[in-house]
Image (cartoon, rainbow, N blue to C red; front, side):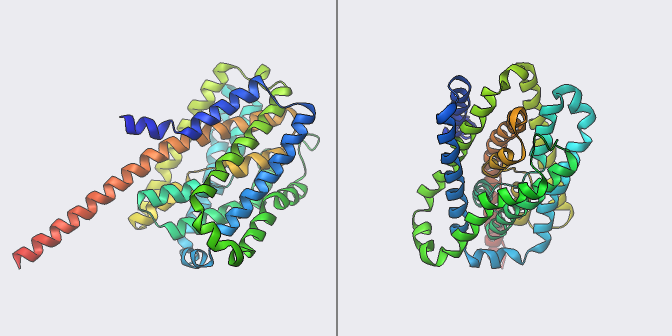
Length: 340
């Protein structure tokens, strides 16, 4: 029981809650807000530069050949999720209101995570090379697909959000360019990056915390908590739980139905069910402005924490299940040898 509690309430979850509380009580304003804005831009650029530097050519080649798996993961991320968001509109709109429902829909069109999807796939015994390729490609595709889906599905007013082409350009400069530069420099810094992979992994979390504080501060100053009630937050949390449960069921069912191996099914579940905060928060800052930013971020922040908690427990379950399968196979092999 204590082990599950540690998985559910890890250090990052607790620190994120503290950051949300700090942004609520002590939001960055004036020159402080300007300073945090530029720190955030630098942190996100460095984050995606390191993502590019971590991605080896061997991993790309090993994973890219598994095109059926990638198509399914991309379909879950950019087709199934948005469809679920649209189908739920008649229920969610009266419960959450326009702005929070827009945030749920924005969550549904975001790309998947990179680091946590790979980490959970590895822990669970899934197809890690395919997870590396699929997660990285999802982030890159999302730079183009997410702004287009936002424009198509949400019809954000041009006075409050940027045009799709402008958004794609701005997001590409923030995310894609550092990623490409990092990958192009892998021959020079790849060995160093691989050596210090564990300390560098903390860069993800630090960048997310900084971006969340900066974005939430701006929203709090705009009156975020005056427009969203505790009841609405409770309902939003339940909606995120239900959405994740439905997606986990569908990704697992599709993986089995389409005949993928157990390792590939694990990759599909963790790759197709997750949404990226590292990518989503800077995208929201480009795509939404003013009073829209806070409601766009809240579903992502809540969903991100729930997915980490649930997927941590699921990865442990898959790992134990894999160990049981291995032991049973060894016992059967030993029994066959004795019978011979």
